[in-house]
Amino acid sequence: MDESKNRHALIRATSALFRRRGYAGVGLSEILAETGLPKGSLYYHFPGGKEQLAAEATRWAGRKVAELIDVSFDGAASFAAGSVALCRAIANLSREDGRIMGCPVLSIIQAGDEKPDLRRIGADVLNDWTSRIAAQAARLGRDDPQADAERLVIGLQGAWVVSLARQDVTPFETLERGMLQPV
Image (cartoon, rainbow, N blue to C red):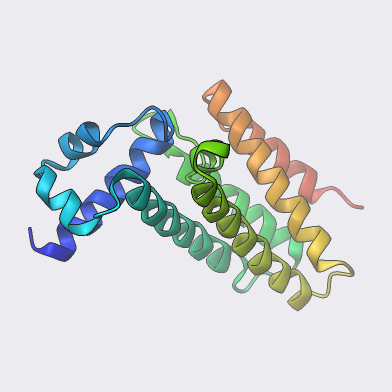
């Protein structure tokens, strides 16, 4: 593997492991075992160790969800239609190897007071998602785009947590049905 492939492999593996076990539940040895890379490769790309790698993995995963937001709302005829498409895309993203995986920023946010820089990065990612959705809500003529975006992000995060706990996507389906109800 070349250097950029090694770096990307570390980021992807870290994101996947955090989604399965959370930030606190993953050690550097597990990340290295997942990638098959030597310890020197990790520190070459991420001299700040696990915290720097976690920050990059969170930003990377955040961009992946941001892409889903953009694709889900592109061409949507209404905010509800874009929201349902996003809900379905997130439900699909949550499935991996027959399991429901956690939100890629949740474990970083839960790092809490021990890692305030990571929590801030998680908050930045959520703010980016909200801003993107608010821009789409404005484009689609919603009266209060910011409030609509915040409600959608809150609903998606809630559905994601409940889906993770139950290990099924029914909460996403429930959220979808609620979005299709007339207001």
